Image (tube, rainbow, N blue to C red):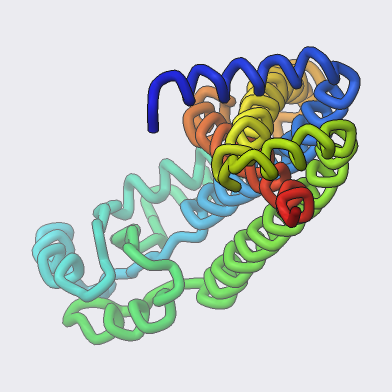
Length: 295
């Protein structure tokens, strides 16, 4: 494409934006609002995923070593435990360490353990980290077959529910984003339609003198892309401010909510907004232009 054509397209696009300022602001506002909703659902999904990962971390598989094994024998089976499929790591916890951790968990009630004296009822154990939580039950069954393992404590039902919930959250988020994308394209195409309607005679004349569809369409597509990019930028800044306000002020006193910082998702949100904003603007303009090119 020739350079003077590109220059012409940009001049026409910006001229149309400033000439039809009200429509341009309306189109930008529509894109911005839809992107804010998309961003909010995305951040909600990411935070739910983060919370579920924390729950998974607490949902540990514990391998209890045979009571007749000494501390040395208990530690000697570490290699066999780690060799089990789906096991990423196995942290050895001695009877004494387990008792101290239990004492810390009891807090003010730790004095209840003083009556035990030197009699420690706890067993040497391994705390297992798995690669895939969905395979909790299968992993527990394999661990029970390791020589020296007396019992395995796992909550496969909790793991299964967490995995199902993660899939549901991801699916719902994707569906909502696609729906918002479709709604955005529909609204922006109707908004841009008002702008193009005022220039239908100009478009007809250009077509009659031999201008190709691509040449006529390009300034409007570029206009839509610029409006989309503008809406994406405003939406990103608003999303950033609103999210920081939410976790810094609204949820500051609710320690039960562990939300990730905006900085951890800033790149993903920026790319999402830029791509969706530009696509919505260009596709919306392109759809609207089709009927005006039939001359």
